Amino acid sequence: MTYDPSNIFGKILRGEIPAHKVYEDETALVMMDIFPQSRGHTLVIPKAPSRNLFDADPAVLAAVIPLVQKVANAVKSVTHADGIRLAQFNEAPAGQSVFHLHFHIIPAYEGIPLAAHGGGKADDAELSALARDIAAQL
Image 1: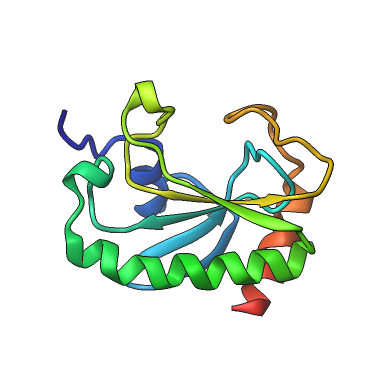
Image 2: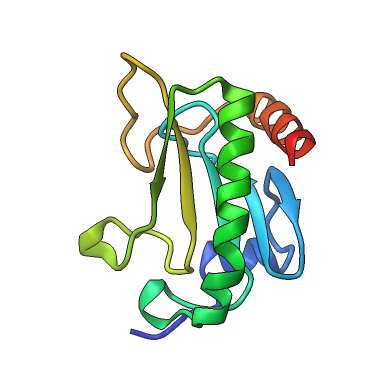
């Protein structure tokens, strides 16, 4: 399969669709997941076009992983999560629903199960507040 630039993350990266942005630099965009599996679910999206891990440039991966770690620490601090789940899906049978490489940073809370991937939409005001608070920790 090849990369299709019309995917929703490609549109967000081009500014065609709004997002609750946490951070952005020349390498990646960090934003809140609008269909979170838990409070504080954040996405790190490399700007370089690739469908997923299989076709990603190793240099892009090397540049983005330190940001993933930095964001995970900020999310854990802001949300007071008991742990962090890092997820990255490759192709539909593995759970990938947006075909642009991205990393999920999902806070885990003791005794609270994660919601389904792509479940209900979160409150925009809460996402904006979380984006602001996480950005302040970066």
